[in-house]
Length: 276
Ligand SMILES: NC(=O)c1ccc[n+]([C@@H]2O[C@H](COP(=O)([O-])OP(=O)(O)OC[C@H]3O[C@@H](n4cnc5c(N)ncnc54)[C@H](OP(=O)(O)O)[C@@H]3O)[C@@H](O)[C@H]2O)c1
Image 1 (cartoon, rainbow, N blue to C red):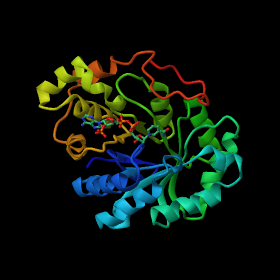
Image 2: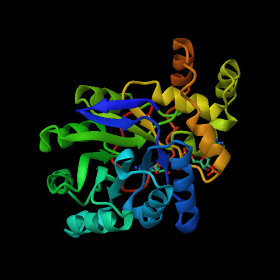
Image 3: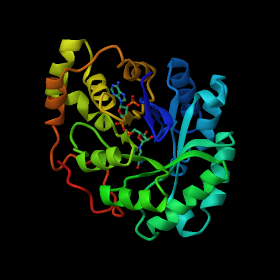
Image 4: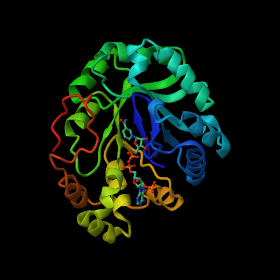
């Protein structure tokens, strides 16, 4: 597994996304993914599956310190002043004393960035989060978070796949020695319909999803967290470290970005950086 390093932290470049995985199915998938070789698991309070994720990790039998575990705090906890309590609840559900990465899930408009970042900093100071970061932050908001935290925020988790350019966020991350985690990395399955990605894959004996995940993780300081509920897909998505895309193929995939390529855009989104 390729590892990323940012601000002294070491992060597995490929992780397992768990949004929409629930209950028993979630537990089984997390257990299976760890058995297949994933060492990085992504969840969030709003997914309502932290207990199932925690059980999956436990069932796998893997030592806690061999897993890089991320969770994210949701808006009501910041606005209600209950962030610290919610972290304790997350840890209880996850059956652990700490998460490896604790994120502000969105730059929620009703909360100040200052307050949200301070809340995750307090969790870090209390030993409940090894690293802290943000998600869905624009480049300008990353700068604010960096200043408030005295450079402690190490990650911005954003939507990133071939149809959306995240150049401003990637540049801001590089400047601040942060890493970027790509969510919806296979564009919720859309990449499998893409003739260009399929054509590139033929050269390497890989499918369009593997080409996409390789393209993401071949970039400096980018991690990707595909989700799958299917055993075969869980294994296939991990099988991306035995080939290398040429510079021309990397550029051809970058060229697929388009202005309307964003999939996740709720009403509380910030004013995004340019999309392509
Ligand atoms: N921070 C945020 O605001 C945020 C937002 C969204 C997502 N996330 C995180 O990012 C993770 C990934 O994003 P996502 O789940 O939205 O989308 P995704 O990983 O891009 O796509 C998941 C979809 O692709 C399918 N798929 C996966 N591997 C496949 C394969 N090899 N062949 C064919 N189909 C395949 C899955 O179906 P099967 O299950 O049937 O394989 C599922 O329908 C989430 O699970 C979550 O942890 C974070």
